[in-house]
Image 1 (cartoon, rainbow, N blue to C red):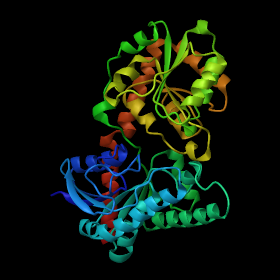
Image 2 (tube, rainbow, N blue to C red; image 1 turned 90 degrees about the horizontal axis):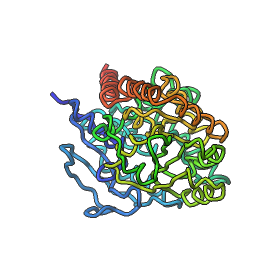
Image 3 (cartoon, rainbow, N blue to C red; image 1 turned 90 degrees about the vertical axis):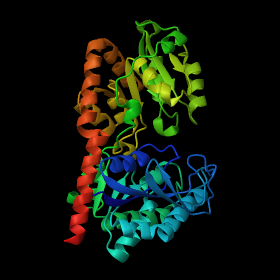
Image 4 (cartoon, rainbow, N blue to C red; image 1 turned 180 degrees about the vertical axis):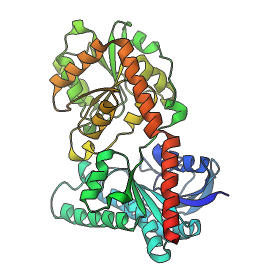
Length: 418
């Protein structure tokens, strides 16, 4: 018999939000009877998707899963007030409309980003004793302030106090807490969460797209006029402040053109124009190539064309204990990595000997790592990719994550009735 479970996430299909969708679908696949409690779709534009109303609660079935939608204030811009209204309006409406769904299921799991998504399960726990597990996707309030919101002043201090207190209560009331990186567990322990209440469950990826080795797409090298003798290090993803991609362009300037090491970027973002101007200023447009956005379906073949995949993250206390989704997706595809980051993102990869690392604050170190990667040769890079894929299948896959989460949920349910 399928056990009922309420999955609580402010975002869900048709919003393209990766693991927020995959968790629910994997739990349904492995035998849970999942009901999703979510908001009216408006991410990432802040514009309500066609066919929905921001002020209207509704039910629908998506891929065999019942989805309960509750109203919210649609917003996703840089206005702190709009973002605050977006989070709090859904926290309140999901509690008002969704409390019955949580109570009937008798068990809930929360995609905890934003942290306010925990409100309805917290109220259900207090009123009915319903157990819930919260999956921490990013640390709050750290991620709010790291994003540039409320950087100073009395409003910042008030927000820090309120969000810190709310986060602490959400951890205290939860039956169990999962984190997505090893060091994040220690941060929570330092904040008063018992170590035995915390488990590591990595985010997995869309395995239908990135879960198998892909054939290289030869059109990329042809488009750039490159041959198989040219070494291609590829960065695919957002070009934002948080990624700190300037260090990659500066590293390219320390490489001689005769070394035939090329940096190719796919994607774009708010820092894209500055990065292009920097490449032009440093005179490296012959070996730094900005190719813009490409269709998601084409990405596996484009990634397979490169010799090395680059992950780049700015050095902040928050990012040192986070695990960007890019890492498991590249490991799943069997790609050797250069992780230009500090903390867990680099350490998890290098501990498995699945790639190289370099400081995000030192262009010379990045340049040296690129030289080492080229000198390693195709066979060694392929072996690194295989070790990375083994790491993904052993620790990060949907099957592993779903099984770990299922055991945590069963334990939470048993504890609540004992």
